[in-house]
Length: 239
Image (cartoon, rainbow, N blue to C red; front, side, top):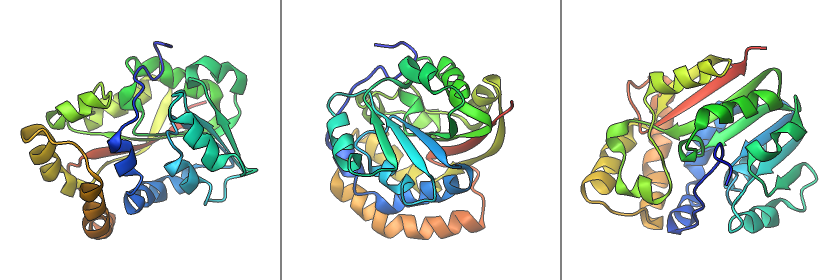
């Protein structure tokens, strides 16, 4: 496998469970919409749940990259009849030279943490971005929350805020926006996955998505939070 791209192929119940997190995905999506532009790449598109959200925006075209031979057929099935979408069954870093200065934005949702050497990955992003284009990242935060569940789904790390900002800046991006996300998720994650070593279930996701997310979406819009279970970052190509 490409050392600078996804090195862990996983399909499991957690992916099925997260497909029910519709409010959570919309919450992430609304932070990205202003930065997408017209021609968008999604790296590690999985089974296409977030891809479908991206296509509800005003973008002209989405190129969805997914290297997993297990997940790609599901992604392709969801998007194949949509003229504004193209699916690519390759590692982004392997084919990035074919997309030089093509994209207005490149999106990573729960993907960067899977990549062993993520710094070269960001070089691939800059290669494919137009001048002043954006990288949109959503990733797990707070190293003390790293659990056996993280390891089981191929997470190499959970990020600290400054760590992620420094990484993106070192690759030639200006950080336009960075924030902690989902402060309410810290305690249940720590209890369930760090202490009790549980796995993610559809019931967990459904309850949190329907009860907690709508409230926290409003709270965090009104008041910035000092910590959160995840990080959200927007970077702009400095060229």
